Image (cartoon, rainbow, N blue to C red; front, side, top):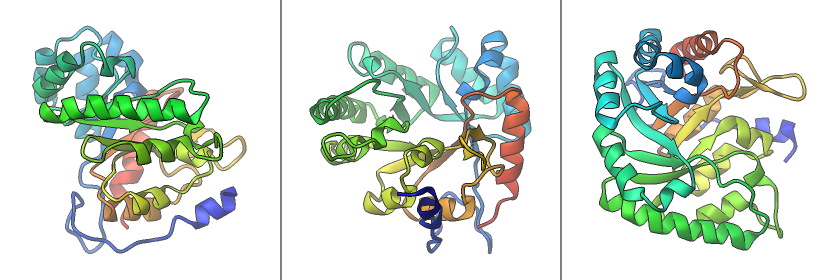
Length: 273
């Protein structure tokens, strides 16, 4: 799909009540942050960084490591800061040996999702099918613990292999009772795919989004939400309609992470759709 076609495909959809505030024009009720964005600050001062994130206005955070803090310590600091953590990123290897321990940690912190951040280099479709089997096994165990297993995309899952998109294979081959997904909107854009197609084709499977924009000038690097070329009103309207629950701002690399998350939050806070 050409970039122009992709952007034109982000059509508006009818709205229905969900986690969005009940207003004549809707807005995201609880804006989240993927804490990978401020990882250096967390490593330097975990507690004050969470407090600073909360002071901006964020109410949900998604972890990508706890920087030596125990689950009870993480839970306590979240409560001190007025934050909740619905989810955390984990490695593919983590969803194997020691998985039950991670699930217990998630329950202690109050999380509902553990998200496999990446599957790394996979060269054939059968490899993705085997990963889907691993997800199903880990997801079944997770469900018994009251946690949902999810997967987070990059752009490589949208490069065809043997005539199929790996991301589609993961959706097709995983059990919806055990596995859901977190779409990174920047990376799906870089993969020349339309997120609304995924929202509509697999309603309820996409539970979370990573919000980051694509700069208008090539090579369309990551930029703050609202500063690029994605049509946020249409994307978020479609996400809302098809059951997305959590929305996490993220910047993989930012010269000034706090200026970046301030700018994205300010844009989303005033956005109506």
